Length: 80
Image (cartoon, rainbow, N blue to C red; front, side, top):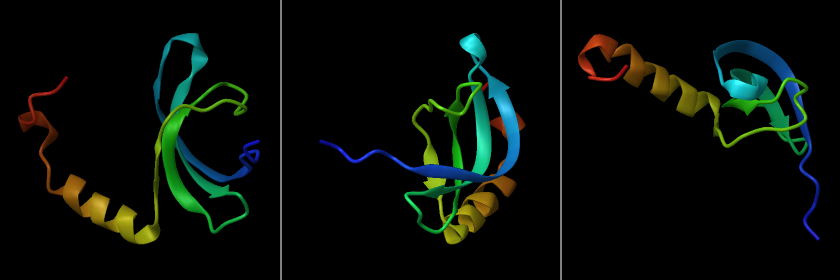
């Protein structure tokens, strides 16, 4: 039997989108299974009991991602 996933939302950084059914795309600092906290981006239900697929980043990965995103002009990407 799979071990239950343990998580603690240490800090909510912000919400940047909402889907039908009240699920919100959030940026949080989360500790998974009592490990060091990492930045986490994923959708959550309104009670934070259910979550969707997301991405978890270390401080080094976050810094690298910020450099990449800061170099991008969103208006030239051809996305909505």
